[in-house]
Length: 548
Image (cartoon, rainbow, N blue to C red; front, top):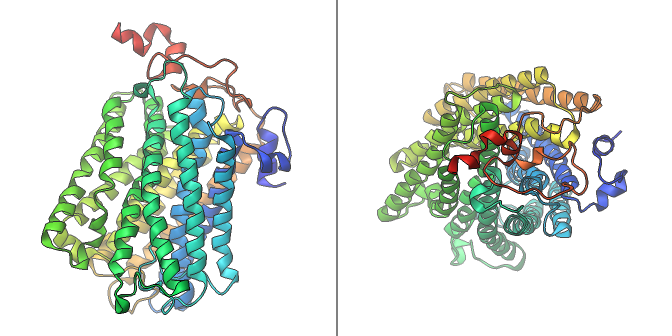
């Protein structure tokens, strides 16, 4: 039985069942499940690619992968994790829970929502089909010019990458517009902007980031397509073009993209930590304004990826200062989460473990980013494994830990069953230990000068032991993910308990049944505070009464 068939047998939706109903659905909940399953499959593929790279780098002068195949896998790993895994995983949760959190019956544009999913899926499959048509793209997920010009990348892999990115960008844009309009138009009575759940706020900001940043990436890849196919020379320096034009266009998208990836995870953690601390979120308004601040400042720091390109000193100073400044709203969120847990009635169920792990790992990644904002330090460490470590502490220790927290948190709402706690804790500790074994030694390798993007290295440089430890850590992470897969299928086979509110939640998705009916709410709820469901369960302690 396929995964979709198992899910369809577990999720009630107006009596609909069968594969065709999933193919033709416009229900936001089913589209959310499709996003989550598809993105999880791509995540597994990207993880397998990471294991292949770690095997290749486990020892010096290894011949496990050829240089060109390594570059293809390296490129598709980064592209997959960013565009085909983390972004659509966030979109999957947003599709499923945002209408429920708003007290709405669906997204405002249901058919556009379905178009967004199918365009994403086709774009991902189209990009991976390049392996069967002369080779996958091999210039890195950032695809720096002039390496991507026809002269240096003569295969069709880069053309598949360009068209895939255009499809994925279109899917993300129309999905983001749908989220923006839904959040503005379909809020329940009394749910003002100052009462929105934090996850809704972070997806709201994320959607604006996507809408305003993706045109820059679209422009960059279209110009590259013209260079490759029509003989233009936008990036060809020999004919008057500029290789730095690609970097400016790409990173004007690329740095907001970091926040497109991390903000939804921050929103998930901001929902989980208060519930498992038995307290309202500390400094709600500060957290919301910090998310907006991150969204705004994210557009002003793109050139800190380009400190080593020979920019004028004045430009370096501006982008360095701005890079320090963006740490302030991030710090606000960290202190908010710590303040929420302080003297709370903490319950360390699996969602909370992953949420706390997120805070710790993201803090390390954020501090790495502050180091790299110091221009002389960046000159020494740019294009070394130190940057790889920073990236993965933010996007694996950060985004993935936050998303996995959301999986354990909302799985009972989606399926009517809880994931097993024992296996969940094994999953957490293997991932936590494994990811630190993978990415912490990369700091040392970066300081020792190991360049990123190399497929092998010579013996006697002192890099062997750290690379071997990293490979061991990668397989520990893989073991943790295997336990999660086992947990997923074992839990689906259990008899449904259909607990409406298993965690004693605060927000409206826990008010309806588990799984929710096709129409979500028999009667649209009325909201009077930041924790509408908690207020309903405890009217004598309702948050809004404090203001009377």
